[in-house]
Structures are given as C-alpha cells and as structure tokens.
Image (cartoon, rainbow, N blue to C red):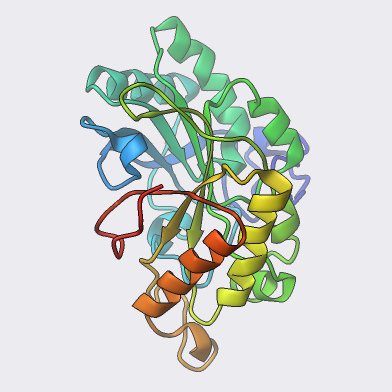
Length: 281
C-alpha cells in the first residue's frame, strides 16, 4: 500500500516504503505527537478512565482553521516503529483506558494495520476508535472493516466550493459519506458503529442542513451525532483572506443546527451538558 501510495483520496502515488513523501509528509513510519488517556472526548468514549488517544502527526487535509496546526501541518512528533506503536496501545490499555483512539489516522492506515497484530499478541482487547477528519479512501475503509470498532468522522462541509477553499480538498464531501449505527454496552460506553462529529462553522447552517439530511436519509436516522461548538479562528485563518470565518460561532448558530438535525429526522446526540446544554436523546 505504501509503495505506490493511494492510502487516502489524494492518490499521491509516491513510494513511502523508500521514505518518499508528498502532501502528508509521512514516509515509512507513522509520526506520533502524543499518546495518553484523554478525557475531552464524548462521554461514551471517555467513560471514567479516559479514551486511549494516539495523536498521529501530519494530516491529509489542510484545513486553514486547524486548531492543532503544529501537529497536523508542521508535524510535531516522533517517528515510531510498528513495535513501538503496538506498545503504546498496550500501555494505554494497562492504564485502564476504555478504547484505543486513533486520531488523524487517514494517511497511516498501513502502519496501524502493521502494528495491530503485534498489539493483539501482547494482549490488546479493548475497542478501536478510528477518529478521522473523514477524508478517507474506500480502500482504507474496506481494510479497516472488521478491524476498527467505532468509526468517528468529523463531517465538516457538504459544499465542494467550501471544501476546496477551507480544507484544500474539493472532493471531500464524496469521501466523507460512510455508514453504521452506534451501539452501546450496559454501562453506556460505545462498542461499535459510527459516531459523526460536525464542527459548527460560521455562516454555514444551510451547508450543515445537507449533511444532516444525508445522515438521516442516506445513512440512518439512528446516526449518533455530536454537534461541536468549539470553533474559533486558528491556524492560517486570515482577516483578509477568510473574513467570513474570522470569528467565533454563536450560541444561536449551534441551536439552529441542532434544530435542523431534528427537522431532518436525527434524534441521537452527544449528551455533554457543557456544550450549550444539547438536549438528551
């Protein structure tokens, strides 16, 4: 897969086995920024002991507003071998984490699949979360089918012109459409399925309507959705180049998108009270 890389929709076709790099600037080995129990995710992922989060550096999206720009585009982190990556998973499990949460894994699917059998041999048993910006190839999704338990895409934009302008990926909406209802265990922790995140963007409520309609009608009305209100201008956002997104979102925009999601037939939402008291399903 790495020899003529088409791991993501960029289809760069470089030989990453020989450390040739292209847009994601990642060669033979994955680059990891950090690995630790994370308590900022959805309730059904973090539970009482945290989600075992492994942050991969670099990203195949180039969002101008990225809030983790130093990790996603400047590559802060260290290269890890498959053995090292497998030991990270085991260490997080030993710390009591409820799952292994791969963040920004789109461009390192082969490296993850190389490390997982080693981790399983060492005793890895907890669910795997694929925490993606939703710019994945269908080949990668097929490879992860039956391996990853919880698919968690952040569906940002429906409109191709907005995707091209802010994500530098015109075909992003086509790549972002995936399937599967979220299933919970008796304690309320997610076991398998899809949890869709939607980052509320300034002046994009009608774009969000297309996303919610697609989720409800083309995927499933049971789709579990987290409407995220934490956008603020970051990364490369410029008052001159991006005046329309050079502001924080409003409470009203968040409430409007939640109402839109309801109107389109969705009813399962993240239950964090801190997020503008989003109503409980």
